[in-house]
Length: 279
Image (cartoon, rainbow, N blue to C red):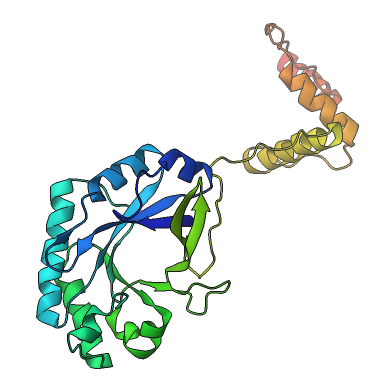
């Protein structure tokens, strides 16, 4: 399933054009850090829904410690609650250092610290469903993602996904209607990408005469096996069809039942019985 992630930096989004381009979901930024509110969050979710997309959210982290991450989670949760929007997809905790803020502020890049920060956010934002979003290099070097037990959204701007988590951000240059987006692929269970599958079931091709006859005979045979005694052997396909068609025709009104004709043995028995009575 194809998707985009958006923030206030994506201005005047033509959501109908996005939908028409085969995009089926949007991940909308709630904000960043402990105080940064994305003013377009509610609007983006509502407009994406109107265009027929499903939505999730992400919150960009500036946390330097697990305590900071708890504050960010509470802030993010409040944004979503106040917006009152439905999120069909998870909230994502975006862990990276795209503007070098963490590096400038003496961030501890150890695997233990980064993983603890992710875990603190995941725990604090409950009961909302939450996963972790990070560049491939962070997932390989800084985050013990396996210990977190959550879904992972990896960022690798490449023609191939080397991580294969729940979702893959494969580009920051997806062009739709003159606008540029981050492009994403959402995977089904088992790691298979869902690439714009239609929700409409294709109608079956018209059946040939032979197929129709075969279907009629097969259905009739199945019904007879479950509801009627076994059919005498040796009946031809033509006679079967004739029988089916006969059953479909209106039946004439029932006539009075005639007495069955006595057999030869019955007649002899009756004669002998009457002879005994007359003696």
